[in-house]
Image (cartoon, rainbow over all chains, first blue to last red; front, side, top):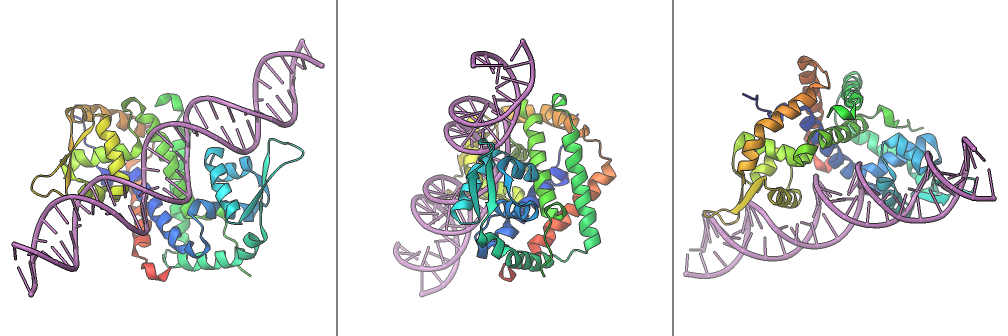
Length: 148
Length: 148
DNA sequence: GCTACTCACATTGTACACGATTTACTCGAG
DNA sequence: CTCGAGTAAATCGTGTACAATGTGAGTAGC
C-alpha cells in the first residue's frame, strides 16, 4: 500500500505558489517602470556588478543564454541596457547600463522598498526564511543526477 | 541616499531559484513517466479529488484556463486524462483520470517518494519551512492591489 | 600552422504563466 | 418568454525557462 502524496503538504507546491505570487507582486510594483521580474533582477545584478558579459550575468542569475538573449534584446529595445560585442574576445557580448537605467536606480529602489514594506515581516524572520529556502535549494543541487 | 537592494539578500530571488531547482529535480524524477511538474501536480490534484471541472482544478492549483487548457490537451494526448463537456452544464469541461493514470498512481508515488527522500530533510524541519513559505505567500496575497 | 577541442552566444522547439478578449451557455428579473 | 448579467472555457499575445543545436571565435597540442 503506497502512501498518498497530498498536494498541500508538498514544499515544492508551496514554493511554486509563492514564486508565482512574488511574480504577481512585482508585476504590479514594477508596472510604472515597465519591467518584468526577470528584467528587474537583471538590472539588480548590473547595478551591483557593473558591465558584464552575458555569461557572467547568467551566472549571477542562474539563467542561460537561451533565456537571457531574448530577454536582453527586449531590455535593449526598452532602453535599459546596451549590448556590444567585445573587441578583445569576439565571443563575448558585454551588457552595460544606459543613462536611463542609472538615473532610474534610486526611484526603483525607493518604490520597491516601499512595496516590500507592505508585507510586514520582521527582518530577523525574513532572513531566517531566506536561509531555510536557500538550504532546500542547496539540498536539491546536491543530488547527483544519476540517482534520479 | 537610497540603500542598495542586494540580489542575494532578497527572499524573492531565493524562492525564484528554489522553484527552478525543484522544476529541474522533478523533470528528472518524472522523466520515465514523461510528465512535467505542472502536469504532475495536476495529476496529484485529480488523484485527491477525483473528476473535476477545469475551473475546479484551477482553484486547487491556482492556475487559470489560459494555462490549463493547453496543458490538459497535452495530458489528454499523452493518455493521462479525458476531457468531456458536461451535459448538465455545457459551459463546464470535466477532467477525469484514465485507466493509465489510475494504474500508474502507485508507481509514480513510489518513485517520487524515493527521489524526494534523497534530499534528506527531517520531516519536522520540512514542515516548518513549508509553513514559513506559506506565510510569505499569505502576506503577499494580503496586500491590496491599489497600494502598489 | 593545422587540427581538435572548447567557449560564448544565438537559435529553435516545447512548455508553461497570465492578462485580456471572445464565445457559448445559464439563469433570473421583468 | 426573452433579454441582459454572469460564468466557464478557449483563444490570443507577450514573456519567460531550458534542452538541444548551430555558429563563429579562441586555444592547446603536436
